[in-house]
Image (cartoon, rainbow, N blue to C red; front, side):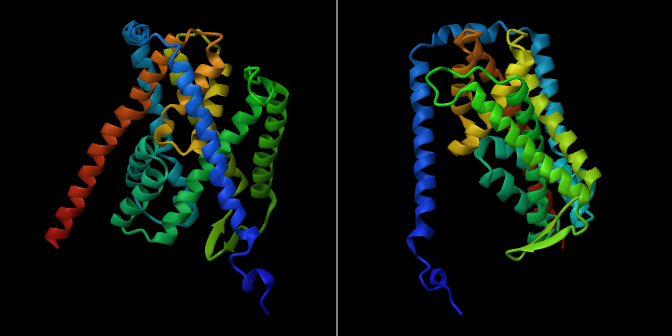
Length: 322
C-alpha cells in the first residue's frame, strides 16, 4: 500500500530542504565574502610580503616537518577501512592512494580529491566500488571523530574569543562543545558495547569497528588535527597560544566545509583574521597563512601530482604489456 508521500514524490515537504540548504550556503558564502572584502581594505599587502620574507629558515623547516608528518599520518586513515572491509591491498599502496586523494581533496574539494581520486586509483588496483565506498566512509569518519573530540574540548574548556558583531557568544560555543563530545562519546560507546556490528542502509553495508579500533581512530585523528594546528602555531612563532590557534583552525575547517569553497580559499583567512587579529597584526597573520598554504597545500599537491602521473603511467604500461 502506497503512502501519500510515495504517491506524491514531489510533495512540498520533500522539496523545501534542498532549497533552504542552498540558501543557507549562499548566505554563509556571502558573509565570508563580506568579511574578506572588509579585511582586505585594511591590509597593507606590502607589509604582508615583508613579514613572509622575515620568517626564519628553521621555523619554515619545522613547519614543513609538521606538515609532512600530518600528511603521512592521514595516509594511514584508509588502513582502518582495509581492516574493516578485509581487502588485501598492500599497506604502501593504500597509503599512496590516501595521500594523493588527500592532497587533491585539500586543494580542489572532496568531490575531486577525496571521492573521485579514491575511486579511480582503487579501481586501478582492482578494488570494487562497494569496498571503496566503505573505505572512504571509514576514512571520513576517522577524520571527523578526532575533530569532534578536539573541538568539543577546546570549545568547552578554552572557548575562542568571539567578535561582538557575531551572532554567537562564547557560552554558545561551550554548549556546542558539550554536544560535540556527546556525539563522539555515543559513537565510542556503541563501538565498545554493541554486539551487532553490521547493518545494511539503503543497500550499503555499514560495519562498526571494535571499541579498541575506535579508540585508535580517535587517537590518530586527534594527533593529525593537532599537527595541522602545530604548523600554524610554529609559523606564528609563539605570538598566539597553541589552544587559541587550534580552536580557530577547527572553526575555520567546518566553515570551509559549509562554504563549499575549494581549499577553503579565503574562508580560512577570514576566520583567522576575524578571531585572532586583536592578538596579532593582520599583516603578520596573513603572511603566516600564505606560507601555511604553501607548506600544507601546494607542496603536497605537487608531490601528489607527480605520484599520480607515475601511477597512471605504470597502469598504462601494464595494460600495454598484457
